[in-house]
Length: 459
Image (tube, rainbow, N blue to C red):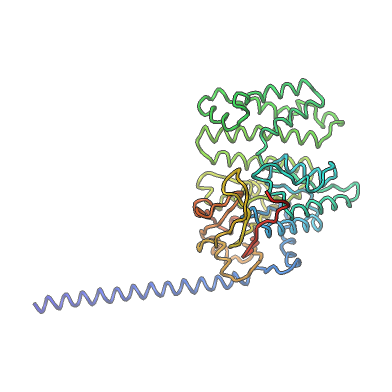
């Protein structure tokens, strides 16, 4: 019996010793991990450039200004600080680096009225130019920072020498389907009743669905023969291949008016394709991908039209941070930031803007009134929370500046994205995705606490 007790006792001691060793090793490992994290955080803190006054942006302007295309992505649409910082950076790039074009994530027709205003081509006041009726976009442009900015752009353009190119504003987005159809027909009616009638006949393909593009796409998913693909493609090709009178053939034709009409035909073609593919395949990513491809097409067409290479792009970070560095890639989604990097390579410089907490202007759902909302503090395992722990209110970080930090910054972390809609009660599901920050952007502007955009009028 004593031998059995001795064996059991010795086994117990060995298990006890092993448990102690495992506990010690785990504690030692955790201590080492904590030390590594502390060292990385310390180095990160020394790497950032605090933003206290206007001159602190000099290093960002120097680096970004060397590129041809500067992308500035906001992580929350309805944020005052993001608007103002984006405007301040754009002004510096325009004045110091001679950038001539700003492309906005906005409906083509809405933004075009802003372009006409800043180039003194219409009699509207600044407030009238910003008075957008789309409930999903009214507050995106009808706010005080934008009011002051378009006034500044108009004044800047007016003081340029007559032979110097003015700054232009164009919208990149695809959401003006019915309006764009009508504008194509209106343009053609100015010089060719035959061409206008042909466009009208082509676009009548949508009439059985009361011009409801969603009803049309749903019907095509059931009956492919109802597709309007061929008519809208042919209408665009009439413009794109100069099958209609175009400025290259007839110098009397206004190149700007022709470009505007051609772009409206492009919107009809691309939105039809994106929505049709979404319903036919049942994959939401199809519409997203076609939308961002459309943005890229529009960007390249505008650069060719304006004969400039220096452009600034404003859009949500989900469009401008390289999709290959986010979980979007797992769902076969691409975005404009990825397409720009692939096309322009080292001549593209992307900036992401993040915040930890504060207030934001957003709606409960699409086509609903916007309201003042409180941002929840960022998730503990997010890029925003990582920067919050630095204890610096506002800063710029060049993510590739310290090579030894790239791996640390590229660890998989959550990142928040708030667009027109914000749902705090389901924030994780609706507003967070996994990213690899150092591969997503070239620089980050971080504001620890932000405030909602100030509007020109109450809804």
